[in-house]
Length: 435
Image (cartoon, rainbow, N blue to C red; front, top):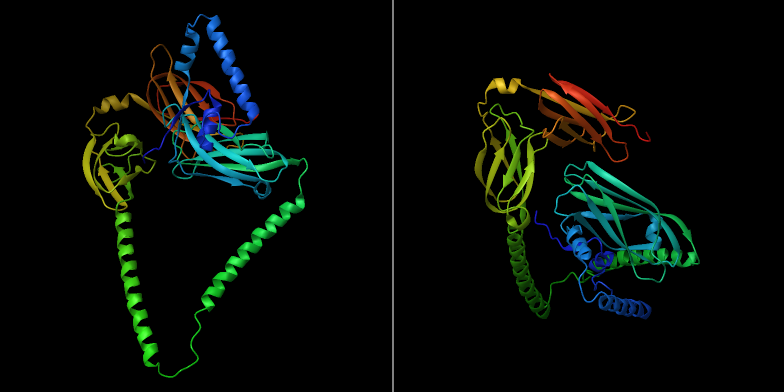
């Protein structure tokens, strides 16, 4: 999936507003008072420069270099959901999704521009959620008691930060009204709702009237010569129209052939069992067509959006020899790749242990959006981090030794424990909200 991205600094909030509003960084519709303030700021900046002797502040240069970057991802699907009450007062002008630093990353933002259409003073609650390809919620963030857009003012931009974003495939932003105040005409809102309903009804009635216009001539007799000639002319015109429609259909079919298709890859072993820790790389995909690599799911599957044509696939997994194959994509395609065991010394496998971690809440229910990390004690020890599956489970293959285990999930306190391994071990990490 190609990412349409724009880079802008998080330190300059106005640049995000400009991006969403489609205007300059200062805004084309600011008041004269804002322009005066800008001129005053420019004068002050000039004075400061003269007092400093025209030199550059090295700390300012360092701050600019260290400024974090945000990358807008215009290809990320998502929507803004307004509650019934919010829909009466607000309009979602535009929404977008962005990554903190290079994508994909652990931190991301959902942004929305809202307009106040009712003239009321509003307080709103906003909840942003992100989901993976399977529709599983990765994380959510709620901002409660937020001041809504001011009546008769410029549209307001809101940004909500989320974590555990790397596997994000879709986002949602829910906006509800917590409080309505100020002077506004409730009857105007009701009338607007009624007018919208009436316009919908009139449109439906117009469609029915159009369908009734084709009345049949009550004369059942044979048509005269003039009517027959007109009928022949109409038939010729209809044939030309049909030919044009056929040509349009062919063009639409050609356009569809030029679109993207879904390639579903399954990685399995020699017995046909899925390999759930494999990775698949596809050339000609991802950002700038440099190639894209995905981890398979617990069924050994990975999915890519690709242009039709020949693509080279490379599948790899620990304990197996890598395989490279070429597949022809022409519409949605499924392809299986079989990996053979690489013949590693079995004695080496006997020296590793399987640590299975189950992350659960205080009611012993699995937490499916948790992250588990293990760090080997001592200087230079190995470390590894995994997101749990839908059963709240993460699995590690580790050598004998002592490890620091960390389990974390949004909405729960982080748990840190030390575990000693000299055999396979199952460990339950219980996170209790409010601890």
